[in-house]
Length: 208
Image (cartoon, rainbow, N blue to C red; front, side, top):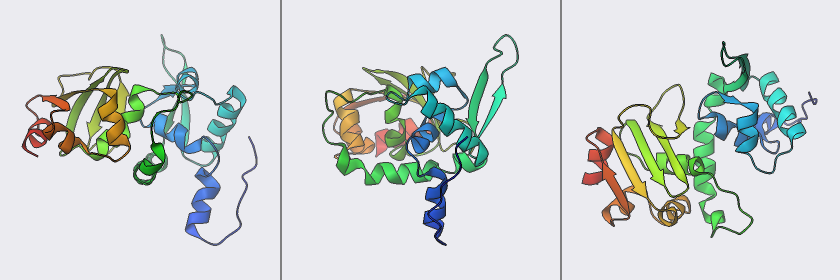
């Protein structure tokens, strides 16, 4: 575990950066917003991070009260990492950072990795109402827990139960939403997103 470095400034922003300002920390939080994850799963969804760096960051985050590590009961018997309440409180920070970074996204570069669930937070910002929403993209399927106060914010794969809304869209539309060129209600009105379901999010999107 590396010693915590500090800016040694009596400022809440500086203190926050003492904890989450290191490379990869906030992206690990992004992945753990999906709920408990195994080390191997985290490594697979954080292309570019070395095994040593990931292990070091996870230890630092546990020391700083952002994550916990626990062993699953048999037959799993694997260790998983999950966010604490303090770690989960970084969701609005990531949302604000994502909004600020829309102008930096641009077109996807040939070297850019992509995972379907990386579009979860941009889509979540445009979802009206609360409920379980399934999203189907060319890159894969994931689901969102809109308005969730605790527990996972999103997850890989189809919704575990019948969703309140099901969205189908192409990667170009999702990327445009991620860049801030349009938002989810506008994309629905333009016919770029198919919405089915009888829950509040589906009805609100169709009426927006």
